Amino acid sequence: MKSLKYLFFLPILILLLGCPSVDDGNSSIYIKNNSENDILFVQTGDRYTECTEDSIPNKNTGRVIEANKTVYDNLVLTHCTTYLYLLSMDTVNKYSWDDIRKNYRYMKKYIINNKSDLKKIDYTITYP
Image (cartoon, rainbow, N blue to C red; front, side):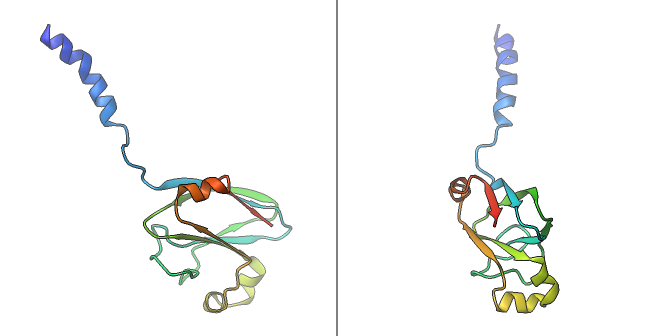
């Protein structure tokens, strides 16, 4: 009878151990480019860049979003504040990355501190 109890509770225990108990910071976001021009989506404070003060990353780690397209991206929220930038591809092609950083040549910026900030914008960034 004892072994029957163990056989009953063992699968339940295995299932419970597989459930995550802590939010890992992963989240999804949609970026809608409703303009007639390609744009660049750049984020800081993710797992690939250092925590920075309010600044565009040292190198271009962005993702091109074609005109009139919507893309889905994975956002990793860490202990850093995450900054999301939208830049014109014309700007990216015209200026050096260093000049873009120093002169804040972005079109739009979003500040994300946690998932509730994402919820406020319905997990979607729309340009324009």
